[in-house]
Amino acid sequence: MKSSLLSRLNDAEVAAFCCCAADAPGWQREVEDFLRASALRSTEHVVGLRDDEDRLVGVSCFDPVTITELPLPNPVKVRGWSLLVMGVAVDHQGNGHAKTLLRETLGRMKQIDETRTVLRARAHADNAVSLRLLISDRLIKADVGER
Ligand SMILES: CC(C)(COP(=O)(O)OP(=O)(O)OC[C@H]1O[C@@H](n2cnc3c(N)ncnc32)[C@H](O)[C@@H]1OP(=O)(O)O)[C@@H](O)C(=O)NCCC(=O)NCCS
Image 1 (spheres, helix red, strand yellow):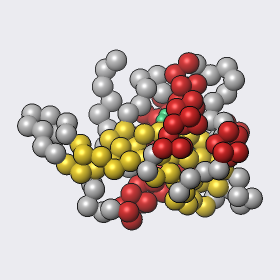
Image 2 (cartoon, protein in one colour):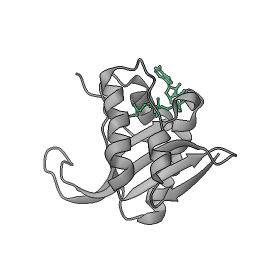
Image 3 (cartoon, rainbow, N blue to C red):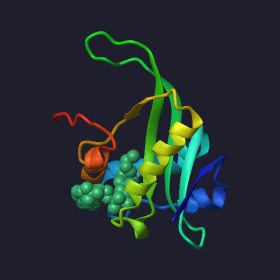
Image 4 (cartoon, rainbow, N blue to C red):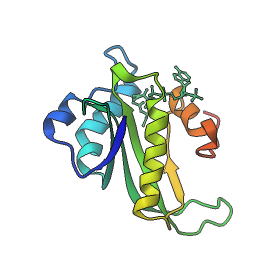
């Protein structure tokens, strides 16, 4: 696997990228629609993970933002990142690629601007894999709230 910071994916790659099984729940279809229709086309940074034959295995999309919600008692403005969405191609899921992609993404963020130290990411409450991913290995310290 190799990762790269993509300026843009071509239309054929965007159209072909499928991270959602046909019988997936609605919220997962929304993730895929958002990725293909919006995030892959308009976020400032896209990281692509490719296999040895250069096929796209996973993507993550992130933007620089000003975080205004922290700390909770007395919020201050902090320059950070918003990780909008991640996806791993359906036929490659369950092999640890999301974990690799997240590490690569965090590395790219640091490379681009190491002064941005806060990351904002949201996961659907039913998205057990993403919640697991966010807290695994203490890559990210996450508070998983009640529904
Ligand atoms: C979410 C997604 C990116 C995960 O990709 P993946 O490559 O299959 O994930 P990984 O194989 O790296 O697994 C990540 C972690 O989730 C765990 N996991 C995998 N399947 C799981 C499941 N069904 N329930 C709970 N945890 C699960 C893995 O064990 C791993 O945790 P660990 O490292 O502590 O063992 C992928 O399923 C996807 O693209 N889904 C559709 C789009 C989406 O929902 N994106 C996230 C919202 S932005």
